[in-house]
Image 1 (cartoon, rainbow, N blue to C red):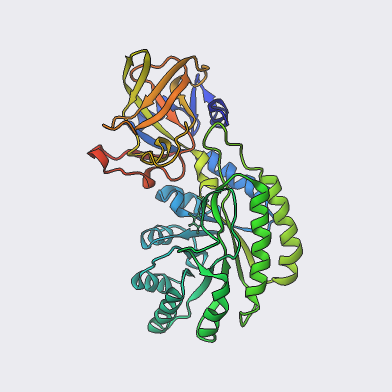
Image 2: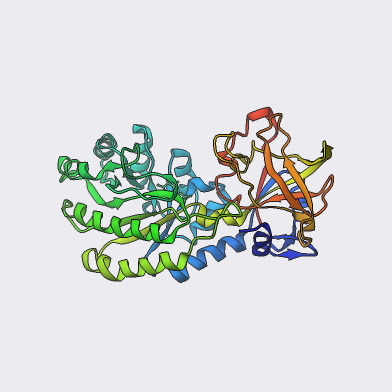
Length: 407
Ligand SMILES: *Cc1c(COP(=O)(O)O)cnc(C)c1O
Protein backbone atom coordinates (compact mmCIF):
# COMPACT_ATOMS: atom_id res chain seq x y z
CA UNK A 1 0.00 0.00 0.00
CA UNK A 2 1.28 3.46 -0.89
CA UNK A 3 1.51 6.40 1.55
CA UNK A 4 -1.33 8.30 -0.16
CA UNK A 5 -3.64 5.34 0.48
CA UNK A 6 -2.86 5.58 4.18
CA UNK A 7 -3.52 9.33 4.07
CA UNK A 8 -6.86 8.54 2.43
CA UNK A 9 -7.89 6.11 5.16
CA UNK A 10 -7.51 8.87 7.79
CA UNK A 11 -8.78 11.58 5.44
CA UNK A 12 -7.73 15.20 5.17
CA UNK A 13 -9.14 18.46 6.49
CA UNK A 14 -7.91 21.96 5.60
CA UNK A 15 -5.17 20.33 3.51
CA UNK A 16 -3.84 18.46 6.54
CA UNK A 17 -4.02 14.87 7.72
CA UNK A 18 -7.17 14.36 9.77
CA UNK A 19 -6.83 12.72 13.18
CA UNK A 20 -10.01 12.20 15.17
CA UNK A 21 -11.75 14.83 13.06
CA UNK A 22 -9.04 17.48 13.60
CA UNK A 23 -6.12 18.65 11.46
CA UNK A 24 -2.87 17.12 12.72
CA UNK A 25 -1.41 20.54 13.57
CA UNK A 26 -4.32 21.20 15.93
CA UNK A 27 -3.85 17.82 17.60
CA UNK A 28 -0.14 18.65 17.98
CA UNK A 29 -1.01 22.03 19.54
CA UNK A 30 -3.37 20.34 22.01
CA UNK A 31 -0.86 17.65 22.93
CA UNK A 32 1.63 20.49 23.41
CA UNK A 33 4.72 18.53 22.44
CA UNK A 34 6.10 16.33 19.72
CA UNK A 35 6.71 13.51 19.15
CA UNK A 36 3.49 11.73 20.02
CA UNK A 37 1.42 8.72 19.09
CA UNK A 38 -2.20 9.37 18.13
CA UNK A 39 -4.84 6.67 17.81
CA UNK A 40 -8.06 7.38 15.97
CA UNK A 41 -11.10 5.91 17.74
CA UNK A 42 -13.26 6.23 14.63
CA UNK A 43 -10.85 3.97 12.77
CA UNK A 44 -10.74 1.56 15.72
CA UNK A 45 -14.53 1.33 15.68
CA UNK A 46 -14.55 0.89 11.91
CA UNK A 47 -12.13 -2.01 12.25
CA UNK A 48 -14.25 -3.77 14.85
CA UNK A 49 -17.36 -3.15 12.73
CA UNK A 50 -15.69 -4.61 9.65
CA UNK A 51 -14.79 -7.78 11.52
CA UNK A 52 -18.27 -8.06 13.03
CA UNK A 53 -19.85 -7.63 9.61
CA UNK A 54 -17.72 -10.26 7.87
CA UNK A 55 -17.00 -12.91 10.51
CA UNK A 56 -19.69 -15.36 11.64
CA UNK A 57 -21.78 -13.99 14.52
CA UNK A 58 -20.77 -16.92 16.68
CA UNK A 59 -17.06 -16.05 16.44
CA UNK A 60 -15.86 -14.07 19.45
CA UNK A 61 -13.21 -11.38 19.04
CA UNK A 62 -10.35 -11.24 21.49
CA UNK A 63 -7.96 -8.30 21.70
CA UNK A 64 -4.34 -9.33 22.27
CA UNK A 65 -3.33 -6.44 24.48
CA UNK A 66 0.40 -6.62 23.94
CA UNK A 67 -0.13 -4.96 20.55
CA UNK A 68 -1.10 -1.76 22.37
CA UNK A 69 -1.70 -1.72 26.13
CA UNK A 70 -2.50 2.02 26.39
CA UNK A 71 -5.24 2.07 29.07
CA UNK A 72 -7.56 4.31 27.02
CA UNK A 73 -7.39 1.88 24.10
CA UNK A 74 -7.92 -1.14 26.33
CA UNK A 75 -10.92 0.56 27.91
CA UNK A 76 -12.30 1.62 24.52
CA UNK A 77 -12.00 -1.90 23.13
CA UNK A 78 -13.20 -3.59 26.33
CA UNK A 79 -16.73 -2.49 25.46
CA UNK A 80 -16.47 -3.58 21.85
CA UNK A 81 -14.70 -6.93 21.79
CA UNK A 82 -15.72 -10.14 23.57
CA UNK A 83 -12.44 -10.98 25.22
CA UNK A 84 -8.99 -9.63 26.06
CA UNK A 85 -5.81 -11.67 25.98
CA UNK A 86 -3.00 -10.63 28.32
CA UNK A 87 0.60 -11.80 28.47
CA UNK A 88 1.88 -10.55 31.84
CA UNK A 89 0.66 -9.60 35.31
CA UNK A 90 0.97 -5.93 34.30
CA UNK A 91 -1.34 -6.42 31.32
CA UNK A 92 -3.68 -8.47 33.50
CA UNK A 93 -3.96 -5.47 35.82
CA UNK A 94 -4.89 -3.17 32.88
CA UNK A 95 -7.54 -5.66 31.78
CA UNK A 96 -8.96 -5.97 35.30
CA UNK A 97 -9.07 -2.16 35.51
CA UNK A 98 -11.29 -2.07 32.40
CA UNK A 99 -14.95 -3.00 32.11
CA UNK A 100 -14.31 -6.49 30.72
CA UNK A 101 -15.41 -9.40 32.91
CA UNK A 102 -12.49 -11.38 34.40
CA UNK A 103 -13.80 -14.66 32.96
CA UNK A 104 -13.47 -12.99 29.54
CA UNK A 105 -9.75 -12.42 30.05
CA UNK A 106 -7.22 -15.05 29.01
CA UNK A 107 -3.60 -15.13 30.10
CA UNK A 108 -1.18 -16.66 27.57
CA UNK A 109 2.58 -16.60 27.18
CA UNK A 110 5.52 -18.70 28.32
CA UNK A 111 7.28 -18.31 31.66
CA UNK A 112 4.33 -17.44 33.88
CA UNK A 113 5.59 -17.39 37.46
CA UNK A 114 3.72 -19.13 40.29
CA UNK A 115 2.83 -15.65 41.64
CA UNK A 116 1.36 -14.53 38.30
CA UNK A 117 -0.59 -17.76 38.03
CA UNK A 118 -1.97 -17.36 41.56
CA UNK A 119 -3.09 -13.80 40.73
CA UNK A 120 -4.82 -15.00 37.57
CA UNK A 121 -6.59 -17.88 39.32
CA UNK A 122 -7.65 -15.61 42.19
CA UNK A 123 -9.11 -13.13 39.70
CA UNK A 124 -11.01 -15.83 37.80
CA UNK A 125 -9.08 -15.39 34.57
CA UNK A 126 -8.66 -18.18 32.01
CA UNK A 127 -5.08 -19.42 32.25
CA UNK A 128 -3.74 -20.68 28.94
CA UNK A 129 -1.07 -23.14 29.98
CA UNK A 130 2.04 -23.34 27.84
CA UNK A 131 3.70 -26.36 29.46
CA UNK A 132 3.04 -29.28 31.83
CA UNK A 133 4.80 -27.25 34.57
CA UNK A 134 2.31 -24.41 34.16
CA UNK A 135 -0.57 -26.88 34.23
CA UNK A 136 0.76 -28.23 37.54
CA UNK A 137 1.11 -24.67 38.91
CA UNK A 138 -2.44 -23.75 38.01
CA UNK A 139 -3.75 -26.88 39.72
CA UNK A 140 -1.67 -26.06 42.82
CA UNK A 141 -2.89 -22.44 42.86
CA UNK A 142 -6.49 -23.63 42.62
CA UNK A 143 -6.03 -26.01 45.57
CA UNK A 144 -4.32 -23.32 47.63
CA UNK A 145 -7.03 -20.76 46.96
CA UNK A 146 -9.93 -23.18 47.15
CA UNK A 147 -10.99 -22.22 43.64
CA UNK A 148 -11.60 -24.18 40.46
CA UNK A 149 -9.26 -22.58 37.89
CA UNK A 150 -10.42 -22.16 34.31
CA UNK A 151 -7.74 -23.64 32.11
CA UNK A 152 -7.21 -23.71 28.38
CA UNK A 153 -4.31 -25.64 26.92
CA UNK A 154 -2.22 -23.79 24.40
CA UNK A 155 -1.22 -26.39 21.85
CA UNK A 156 1.90 -26.34 19.73
CA UNK A 157 0.40 -27.82 16.57
CA UNK A 158 1.97 -30.61 14.58
CA UNK A 159 1.79 -28.40 11.49
CA UNK A 160 3.54 -25.15 10.65
CA UNK A 161 2.07 -22.12 8.91
CA UNK A 162 4.15 -20.73 6.11
CA UNK A 163 4.19 -17.05 5.25
CA UNK A 164 3.92 -15.66 8.77
CA UNK A 165 6.10 -12.73 9.77
CA UNK A 166 6.68 -14.65 12.99
CA UNK A 167 6.04 -18.35 13.29
CA UNK A 168 4.78 -19.34 16.73
CA UNK A 169 3.65 -22.91 16.19
CA UNK A 170 4.94 -26.13 14.62
CA UNK A 171 8.30 -27.82 15.21
CA UNK A 172 10.02 -27.24 18.56
CA UNK A 173 8.59 -24.16 20.31
CA UNK A 174 8.63 -22.42 23.69
CA UNK A 175 4.92 -21.82 23.07
CA UNK A 176 2.29 -24.36 24.00
CA UNK A 177 2.32 -28.07 24.79
CA UNK A 178 3.22 -30.23 21.80
CA UNK A 179 0.02 -31.70 20.38
CA UNK A 180 1.26 -35.25 20.92
CA UNK A 181 1.94 -34.57 24.64
CA UNK A 182 -1.49 -33.09 25.33
CA UNK A 183 -3.40 -36.37 26.01
CA UNK A 184 -0.87 -37.45 28.66
CA UNK A 185 -0.88 -34.01 30.29
CA UNK A 186 -4.69 -34.05 30.46
CA UNK A 187 -4.71 -37.58 31.83
CA UNK A 188 -2.34 -36.65 34.66
CA UNK A 189 -4.75 -34.05 35.99
CA UNK A 190 -8.05 -35.67 35.02
CA UNK A 191 -10.66 -34.87 37.63
CA UNK A 192 -8.72 -32.11 39.40
CA UNK A 193 -8.95 -29.35 36.78
CA UNK A 194 -11.56 -27.77 34.54
CA UNK A 195 -10.02 -27.66 31.08
CA UNK A 196 -12.43 -25.59 29.02
CA UNK A 197 -10.65 -25.95 25.72
CA UNK A 198 -7.68 -25.27 23.53
CA UNK A 199 -5.77 -22.44 21.93
CA UNK A 200 -3.70 -22.89 18.79
CA UNK A 201 -1.77 -19.85 17.63
CA UNK A 202 0.25 -20.66 14.56
CA UNK A 203 1.85 -17.33 13.71
CA UNK A 204 1.66 -13.59 13.36
CA UNK A 205 1.64 -10.94 10.62
CA UNK A 206 0.28 -13.17 7.87
CA UNK A 207 -1.02 -11.41 4.75
CA UNK A 208 -2.06 -14.52 2.80
CA UNK A 209 -5.71 -15.37 3.39
CA UNK A 210 -5.48 -18.92 2.08
CA UNK A 211 -2.67 -19.80 4.49
CA UNK A 212 -4.63 -18.44 7.45
CA UNK A 213 -7.69 -20.36 6.27
CA UNK A 214 -5.71 -23.59 5.99
CA UNK A 215 -4.29 -23.12 9.48
CA UNK A 216 -7.80 -22.65 10.84
CA UNK A 217 -9.06 -25.81 9.13
CA UNK A 218 -6.14 -27.84 10.45
CA UNK A 219 -6.67 -26.36 13.91
CA UNK A 220 -10.28 -27.55 13.95
CA UNK A 221 -9.14 -31.04 12.94
CA UNK A 222 -6.41 -31.09 15.57
CA UNK A 223 -8.77 -29.89 18.29
CA UNK A 224 -11.25 -32.60 17.25
CA UNK A 225 -8.62 -35.22 18.10
CA UNK A 226 -7.62 -33.53 21.35
CA UNK A 227 -11.16 -32.84 22.54
CA UNK A 228 -11.75 -36.60 22.72
CA UNK A 229 -9.46 -36.56 25.76
CA UNK A 230 -11.56 -34.03 27.67
CA UNK A 231 -14.05 -35.37 30.22
CA UNK A 232 -16.74 -32.88 29.17
CA UNK A 233 -17.72 -30.90 26.08
CA UNK A 234 -15.36 -28.37 24.50
CA UNK A 235 -16.32 -24.83 25.57
CA UNK A 236 -13.42 -22.74 24.29
CA UNK A 237 -11.86 -23.00 20.85
CA UNK A 238 -9.27 -20.29 20.32
CA UNK A 239 -8.30 -20.47 16.66
CA UNK A 240 -5.52 -17.89 17.01
CA UNK A 241 -5.35 -15.03 14.57
CA UNK A 242 -2.24 -13.85 12.81
CA UNK A 243 -4.12 -11.43 10.54
CA UNK A 244 -1.39 -9.15 9.13
CA UNK A 245 -1.40 -5.52 8.06
CA UNK A 246 0.52 -3.95 5.15
CA UNK A 247 3.58 -2.15 6.48
CA UNK A 248 5.48 -1.42 3.29
CA UNK A 249 4.60 -0.48 -0.27
CA UNK A 250 5.01 -4.03 -1.49
CA UNK A 251 2.60 -5.46 1.11
CA UNK A 252 -0.98 -6.02 -0.04
CA UNK A 253 -3.76 -5.88 2.55
CA UNK A 254 -5.11 -9.20 3.80
CA UNK A 255 -8.15 -10.45 1.90
CA UNK A 256 -10.44 -10.59 4.93
CA UNK A 257 -13.42 -11.82 2.93
CA UNK A 258 -11.64 -15.06 2.04
CA UNK A 259 -10.66 -15.60 5.69
CA UNK A 260 -14.24 -14.88 6.74
CA UNK A 261 -15.76 -17.24 4.15
CA UNK A 262 -13.60 -20.06 5.47
CA UNK A 263 -14.66 -19.28 9.03
CA UNK A 264 -18.32 -19.41 8.00
CA UNK A 265 -17.68 -22.88 6.50
CA UNK A 266 -15.99 -24.06 9.69
CA UNK A 267 -18.54 -22.58 12.06
CA UNK A 268 -21.54 -23.88 10.11
CA UNK A 269 -19.88 -27.26 9.42
CA UNK A 270 -17.47 -29.06 11.75
CA UNK A 271 -17.72 -26.62 14.66
CA UNK A 272 -21.54 -26.78 14.71
CA UNK A 273 -21.49 -30.58 14.42
CA UNK A 274 -18.69 -31.43 16.80
CA UNK A 275 -18.58 -28.56 19.28
CA UNK A 276 -22.06 -27.14 19.77
CA UNK A 277 -21.13 -25.72 23.18
CA UNK A 278 -17.82 -24.11 22.23
CA UNK A 279 -17.09 -20.42 21.73
CA UNK A 280 -14.85 -20.08 18.67
CA UNK A 281 -12.41 -17.22 19.32
CA UNK A 282 -10.25 -15.20 16.94
CA UNK A 283 -7.49 -13.35 18.75
CA UNK A 284 -6.10 -10.23 17.12
CA UNK A 285 -3.59 -7.57 18.03
CA UNK A 286 -2.18 -5.54 15.17
CA UNK A 287 -5.16 -6.12 12.87
CA UNK A 288 -7.41 -4.34 15.36
CA UNK A 289 -5.19 -1.42 16.30
CA UNK A 290 -2.17 -1.21 14.00
CA UNK A 291 -3.71 0.80 11.18
CA UNK A 292 -5.54 3.17 13.54
CA UNK A 293 -2.42 4.86 14.89
CA UNK A 294 0.25 7.27 13.69
CA UNK A 295 3.51 8.52 15.11
CA UNK A 296 3.88 12.29 14.69
CA UNK A 297 7.27 13.99 14.80
CA UNK A 298 8.44 17.50 14.05
CA UNK A 299 11.25 18.47 11.68
CA UNK A 300 14.03 20.11 13.70
CA UNK A 301 16.62 20.39 10.95
CA UNK A 302 16.87 20.17 7.20
CA UNK A 303 20.29 19.73 5.73
CA UNK A 304 21.83 18.78 2.44
CA UNK A 305 24.85 16.51 2.51
CA UNK A 306 26.61 15.88 -0.80
CA UNK A 307 23.43 16.16 -2.76
CA UNK A 308 21.20 14.16 -0.35
CA UNK A 309 18.51 16.00 1.61
CA UNK A 310 17.96 14.97 5.22
CA UNK A 311 14.99 15.88 7.38
CA UNK A 312 16.00 15.44 11.01
CA UNK A 313 12.98 14.93 13.26
CA UNK A 314 12.55 15.09 17.04
CA UNK A 315 11.53 11.42 17.31
CA UNK A 316 13.13 8.22 16.14
CA UNK A 317 13.85 4.56 16.67
CA UNK A 318 13.68 4.93 20.46
CA UNK A 319 9.91 5.32 20.01
CA UNK A 320 9.45 3.41 16.80
CA UNK A 321 11.92 0.58 16.59
CA UNK A 322 10.15 -1.34 13.86
CA UNK A 323 10.08 1.49 11.31
CA UNK A 324 13.86 1.80 11.70
CA UNK A 325 14.39 -1.91 11.02
CA UNK A 326 14.85 -3.38 14.52
CA UNK A 327 18.45 -2.38 15.27
CA UNK A 328 19.57 -3.32 11.79
CA UNK A 329 18.76 -7.01 12.23
CA UNK A 330 15.89 -7.07 9.76
CA UNK A 331 15.88 -6.03 6.14
CA UNK A 332 14.73 -2.47 6.42
CA UNK A 333 11.93 -1.20 4.17
CA UNK A 334 10.27 2.17 4.37
CA UNK A 335 7.07 2.48 6.35
CA UNK A 336 4.49 4.85 4.83
CA UNK A 337 5.34 8.47 5.66
CA UNK A 338 3.60 11.79 4.94
CA UNK A 339 4.03 15.45 5.81
CA UNK A 340 0.98 15.66 8.04
CA UNK A 341 0.37 19.39 7.71
CA UNK A 342 0.73 19.19 3.90
CA UNK A 343 -1.03 15.87 3.49
CA UNK A 344 -3.06 17.03 0.54
CA UNK A 345 0.07 17.70 -1.52
CA UNK A 346 1.67 14.97 -3.59
CA UNK A 347 5.33 14.15 -2.99
CA UNK A 348 7.96 15.80 -5.13
CA UNK A 349 11.12 16.10 -3.09
CA UNK A 350 13.28 12.99 -2.49
CA UNK A 351 14.35 13.17 1.14
CA UNK A 352 15.68 10.94 3.86
CA UNK A 353 13.94 11.22 7.23
CA UNK A 354 16.20 10.48 10.18
CA UNK A 355 15.59 10.59 13.92
CA UNK A 356 17.51 12.46 16.58
CA UNK A 357 19.58 9.55 17.86
CA UNK A 358 23.30 9.35 17.38
CA UNK A 359 23.31 6.21 15.25
CA UNK A 360 22.92 5.66 11.50
CA UNK A 361 20.29 3.05 12.36
CA UNK A 362 17.88 5.83 13.32
CA UNK A 363 16.31 5.99 9.90
CA UNK A 364 12.57 6.51 9.48
CA UNK A 365 12.28 6.98 5.72
CA UNK A 366 15.08 6.38 3.22
CA UNK A 367 15.01 8.36 -0.02
CA UNK A 368 11.25 8.86 -0.03
CA UNK A 369 9.16 11.36 -1.97
CA UNK A 370 7.50 14.00 0.18
CA UNK A 371 6.07 17.41 -0.57
CA UNK A 372 8.67 20.09 0.15
CA UNK A 373 9.08 19.97 3.95
CA UNK A 374 11.03 22.20 6.26
CA UNK A 375 11.74 22.93 9.90
CA UNK A 376 8.58 22.71 12.07
CA UNK A 377 6.62 20.62 9.59
CA UNK A 378 5.00 17.50 11.04
CA UNK A 379 6.23 14.17 9.71
CA UNK A 380 3.73 11.39 10.20
CA UNK A 381 4.51 7.68 10.10
CA UNK A 382 1.59 5.35 9.53
CA UNK A 383 0.80 1.81 10.78
CA UNK A 384 1.88 2.77 14.31
CA UNK A 385 -1.07 1.65 16.39
CA UNK A 386 0.59 -1.66 17.35
CA UNK A 387 4.03 -2.56 18.65
CA UNK A 388 5.14 1.07 18.71
CA UNK A 389 5.91 2.71 22.00
CA UNK A 390 5.90 -0.37 24.21
CA UNK A 391 7.97 -2.35 21.71
CA UNK A 392 10.73 0.27 21.42
CA UNK A 393 13.92 1.00 23.40
CA UNK A 394 12.66 4.22 25.02
CA UNK A 395 15.60 4.52 27.43
CA UNK A 396 18.13 4.54 24.59
CA UNK A 397 19.85 8.00 24.62
CA UNK A 398 17.67 9.36 27.40
CA UNK A 399 15.15 11.44 25.45
CA UNK A 400 11.78 12.03 27.10
CA UNK A 401 8.96 9.56 26.51
CA UNK A 402 6.48 10.58 23.81
CA UNK A 403 2.87 11.43 24.56
CA UNK A 404 0.04 9.10 23.54
CA UNK A 405 -3.48 10.26 22.75
CA UNK A 406 -6.70 8.58 21.73
CA UNK A 407 -8.48 11.10 19.50
C1 LIG B 1 1.17 -11.58 20.13
C2 LIG B 1 0.02 -12.49 20.16
C3 LIG B 1 -1.14 -12.17 19.47
C4 LIG B 1 -1.29 -10.94 18.63
O1 LIG B 1 -0.52 -10.99 17.48
P1 LIG B 1 -0.83 -9.93 16.31
O2 LIG B 1 0.15 -10.27 15.25
O3 LIG B 1 -0.61 -8.58 16.89
O4 LIG B 1 -2.23 -10.12 15.91
C5 LIG B 1 -2.22 -13.03 19.56
N1 LIG B 1 -2.14 -14.14 20.32
C6 LIG B 1 -1.02 -14.49 20.99
C7 LIG B 1 -1.02 -15.73 21.79
C8 LIG B 1 0.10 -13.69 20.93
O5 LIG B 1 1.20 -14.04 21.59
